[in-house]
Image (cartoon, rainbow, N blue to C red):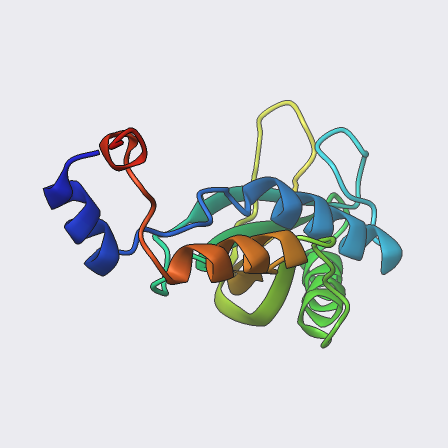
Length: 170
């Protein structure tokens, strides 16, 4: 390590959490909707709720632990638009109830905000009509620090690491 890189290392902090919240969020949303009694998944028959279009934005804090993600739930009914909207309301209640959305031990949900609602009836020449209600959510999550991460940060905050040249000077 050069002296310049050592000095820059004292002042430049890089995010320590280079992992994504995508998988824990998807699994947590599917689990939350299933626990609410909704049929979830692409091949679950009708009526059902699908989860898709997950997008994770850039890190929102200096440490890289806070993330903003968006996702869409799609309530699909083959009976009526009212049935689709009712499923959407049930999904929204499940996802926005405080503490209901659990992402496991590594991530904590800070907030869930319904963003955009769209109904989208689908008419096909040969099939029945499908009534779709798409709801977009903005979800903020935070990476939970483990004791191991805190110990590593505490150890590296003090003195800079010694370089090989400094160790071999005798």
